[in-house]
Length: 191
Image 1 (spheres, rainbow, N blue to C red):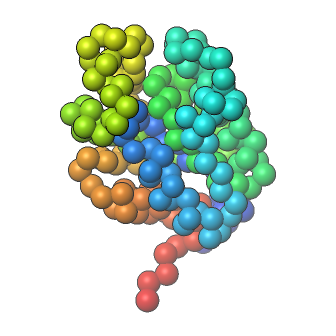
Image 2: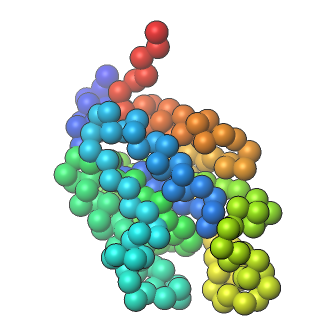
């Protein structure tokens, strides 16, 4: 193990899941968390929960969405500074804003791992029990990310998973393999 890997393992990191609503960010973050918890404290910053408790009152304008993402990034950095694995699961639709969060982390020496959770629109519509996609496609919901508002996929995420093309366990293993390769998790022990 290199010195860099040893240092990275002792400190916290930010694991940032991004993707459209219903893509599986929360599901995947919950699948990965127990593996991280074996080595360090883990906190999941779920986009819906953050909107309820930390960003109440914000709307869905670009400015409000950016404020929300910056708040999530700030809390994630605080957790990572304390040695935790800060796992975020938020749409975070704008590449520039996600990249700003990454730069803030890296400026503090906090490893940042971006995971793009992608799925086809047809899959997202079929998973949507609230019918929000159908309403957005019918023009009833303005500023709906991926329909009437943009989603800018990451240019170079560390990991990309396809939630409509692979099982959750396979996607989780891709994320964990990357974290092991970066020295953020202990290598997997094979029997």
